[in-house]
Length: 314
Image (cartoon, rainbow, N blue to C red; front, side, top):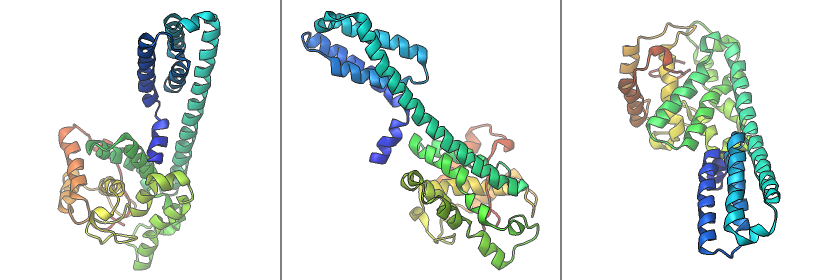
């Protein structure tokens, strides 16, 4: 519950709605109880104003003036002091709140930029999978949105999709880019990348709490229980990991790799259908296929995967 609350604090839109609600309540109380000093309610509404409109300075100024105007004219006690004092005080509160929200958003952006830098480091090692992780992330989010998952869940899937293959940084390059079939020993090394990625990121407290690590660790699990590294089955596999698995596998077949050419779109889609209930969660595949059928999505817009067995490769 606390993690969800923290996630909502990072979403300024909630505070925009909260500002209008609080201001309306403050005005209503001022009318019903005209001799009551509504200072606290108006201050809280201005705090919400600063957070909600931190990136809209004109709106911030206009609404602050509006709040002060309402309080100054509706509350008799407010009229005992100068309008300009109220305006400066309330604007300072709004400005400080806006600055705090700006800092929160900057931290989130810096974390995302760092994530993308890590992915770029992985892409530079293997030109055949360049942009792979970013593509997986975008398409997995489309599937999640089609399944009506919350914005918070979609955000986790976005970040997890970017980082799902980060463990391949620990795989020797001669194995990662080998043009011929892997030996059993080499394939087992490739299969270790989810655990390597998990170990790399497990100390990031936010990743641990929001479920993003589940994507990194379980995106190669199969719905029939024959995947790796844990051999989880069905709904025991976290939903986010099942979604990334489908997006990942699709691109593996649609992208040219060092060891094979890309597959035809119809062949790829038929392979996805054939593996419903075995490699893939049927519900996730259906959501994926409905996106293809209901929207005019070009092959170039369809996004990404890497190493599995079954419908995909390595």
